Each structure stands twice: as C-alpha cells, then as structure tokens.
Amino acid sequence: MSVAPLAPVRTCATISKLPIEKSQPTNQSDLSAEGFRFAIVASRWNDGIVSRLIDGAREALKQLSAEPDTIEVFRVPGAFEIPLCAQKAAETGRFDAVICLGVIIRGDTPHFEYIAATAARGISEAGLRTGVPLLFGVITADNINQANERSGNDQNNKGYEAAMAAVEVVNIFKNSFSK
Ligand code: DLZ
Image 1 (tube, rainbow, N blue to C red):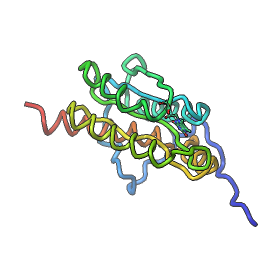
Image 2 (cartoon, rainbow, N blue to C red):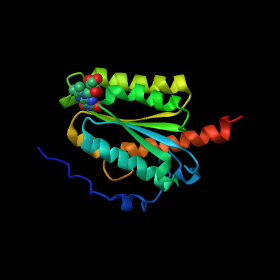
Image 3 (spheres, protein in one colour):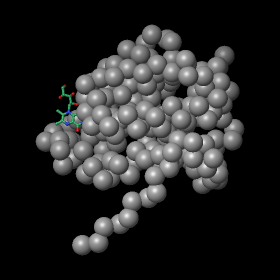
Image 4 (cartoon, rainbow, N blue to C red):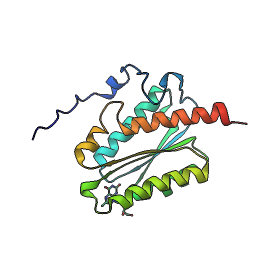
C-alpha cells in the first residue's frame, strides 16, 4: 500500500507570507478584525491537534489586525461540551463572534456520530438563539492522519478557516445589519 507523502510543514511565519488566492471562500483582502472581540471555545480531547487549531485561529485573527488581548480562549472537556460554553460566551455580550474548535476522530470514538451531530447541531442552534456568529471549527475525521492534515500550519487549518469565516461574518453584521 502506498502512502501519500505529507505536505511540507509550514510555520506560522510562513502562513502570513502565503499569497491570497482568489478561490478562497473568504475574500481576505476586504476583511479587518480590528476593533472586534473574539471568544475561542476549544475542547481538550485530542489536545495536541486542538492546540494547533487554536494557533491557526490566532494566526488568522492576527493577519486581519486583531489585537491579541481581544481574544479569549475557553477550554472545555470535549466537543460535547462546546455548544453550551459557546452559548454562555455569546450571552455575555462581550464577543462579536465565538469560534468553536475541537477534534472528533471516528476510529477512537465509539459514539462518534452522536458527539459530532450534537456538537454541530448545538453550535448552530446556539448561534441562532443568541444572534452571535458561532463558527464551526470542529474536525470530524476518520483517523488521526486526516485530523493532522486539517490542522497543519497552512490555510487548510480548520481553526484558521473558522477564524477567517468569523471575521467575514462580523464584517457583514457591521456593514449590512447594524441599525
Ligand atoms: C467521550 C469522548 C470520546 C470517546 N471521544 C471524543 C472525541 O473524539 N473528541 C471529543 O472532543 N470528545 C470526545 N469524548 C468526550 C465527549 O465530548 C464529552 O466530553 C464526554 O462525553 C463528557 O460529556
């Protein structure tokens, strides 16, 4: 069986030099995180991978000019606990967006479908209930290799992607939905 070679590891310093591609779902050139506040709610299961998602999210926010002290990180035991903590964070009114990060691996998780579905539905419902953008940066992977691919030091890092999406949505709120 042949195994695909791993993509070269890039440091966060390298990420900031990557060219902005037009095909990205988020048009970064129009975005600014300046003046916004963010909560990151991140689970501890698969902590090494989740930590890389947090790094990716921080890097995206930094690239878009967020100040480090506008980002608060809350750790919860597992992905199952993310929705309630994210809702509580949203209800404080202190945050413009809540970025939810976690890793659920099918092979290691007997109740994979339940935990993944509960996290996804709970995060979505908490966003609708509170009116605060809640972003889904929870990796649901078949195995650890897939989870590693989605948490590397590049723009495919799901934490990076979720943070970019957070800034996009808060900009839409500010520019189009404010009174
Ligand atoms: C119990 C459990 C299992 C088996 N697997 C994961 C996982 O892969 N990723 C994750 O974030 N959490 C997992 N958990 C923990 C649950 O999310 C939850 O924290 C516990 O069931 C306690 O409510």
